[in-house]
Structure formats: structure tokens, C-alpha cells
Image (cartoon, rainbow, N blue to C red):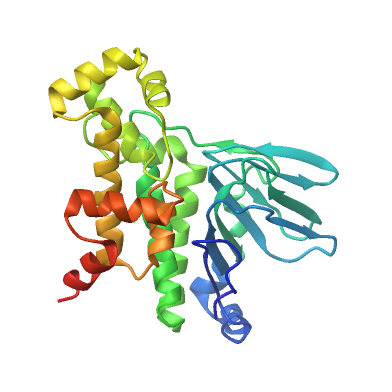
Length: 293
């Protein structure tokens, strides 16, 4: 059962209580299980307050924009690339910033092992882009959990999502180990490092100045070096990465096109369609139809 959409591009899924009632007798699900999860892009006017505590832990991972939450009378500001976990059994409230509303992934969860992953339940934890960051890998884990629960809510699907969720939470609690376990080479030149940064921020609308600031060079110098090595200006290359990622989402998921727009950092669906058509020679809907043949 899905929650009624309230934000453009929103997705969410709730596990029915009837299924959750059986979790107490299931060895895997009793240890950790997801009750609900979703993705809210640019969640303008998003606000929730619970004076009567619930038994869920609530993970909110802000990937863009700003927001806040309040627990035990203490308010915390939340910026992009950060997460927090609200503890179970405590009254709380949270919401999006009025001027720069957040884009969030959120998960309600329970289980006997849930608290083991909550080392800092009332603190905001940063997840900055770095030379070995794996932000897209983590977001892919979220999508795999979501797809499992959205597939039909069989017991095995919920168990599979729960197993992945252990991994997902571990990527947050054991961040250095997660980043170091992937292997591979750390980018050793300005262009490779910039491409990694663009890939890790595919869901954002970066400016050339922001990209240059990350690289540590001026915008003009970065542009010259980047174009010499790749044949494209940094923002043009970034748009190609966005379209490539959109192609994968169109092929491998059933996400609505307005959701895919937000997943690649574009809020205007008409602009997204024009960009997609310019790069691929066809509209997003046509690309999806052809991929199904």
C-alpha cells in the first residue's frame, strides 16, 4: 500500500501491519525490519510533529536543501549531505526549510538490533563527498530495498529488504570502513577527481563555481583542463552523466519520469525532456518504450 503523493516526484511504500505482526516470530525480521520508506524531493512545507511517541526509529537522509528536527526540546539544523536517526519512544518534530526545502530519503524501522546501528540518535552526521566516497552506491542500496518492498510485499521480499537494510545502516555507522572496502584507485588528477565529484552529486544542480571550488582551481582553469582531456565543458559533461543515469533508471526501474527528473537534479520536467532528447535523440518515454522491446 502506497502513501498518497504530496510532493512532485514523491515515492513511498508502507508494509501492512498484518505482515509486520508476523515479524515477531521471524528470526530475521524480528532483528531488523522496515515499516515504511520513501523519497521526498524538494519537499516544500513538509512538517511532522509527534507528541505521542511511536515505536519506530526514523532515519532521514538529506541529500539536498535544508531542514530541521527537534528532540527533547533541542532543535537541530540539517543541511545537504547529512543524516539523523530519531530514537524510538521519544516525542519529536521535523520539517523542511521554508526557503530551501530538503530532498530526503526516509525509513521507519524496528527490531531488536535496531538500536545497535543508532550510535548518535540525536546528532546530525555529515556525509561529505570525498575522493573515495560511495554516495551513489548507498543510494542504489536504497533503491534495491524500495524495489523489493514495492514488488508485492511477500515475506521473502521483506526479508530481502531487511537483509539489505543491515548493509545500508552499516554504510552510515561504519563510514570509513565502507569507503575503504570498495578497493579501486583514488583519482589522482584534477579531471578524474572532478568526474567522481559529479557522479557523487548526480542528484544536485551544481554550478561551475561549486565544481571549481571542490577541485581547488579557478573555474577558467578547471574548464580548460577538463575540456582538453574530455572534449566537454564540466557542466556539459555533468548533463551527459545525468542523462546516462536517467537512461539506467528508465530501463531498470518503473519510476515515474517526474521522479527521475529529481533523481538527476532537475526539477523542471520539460527541461529534462529537452535535455534528454538533445543527448539521446528521443524523449524519455520513447526511450523507455524501446528498452522494453
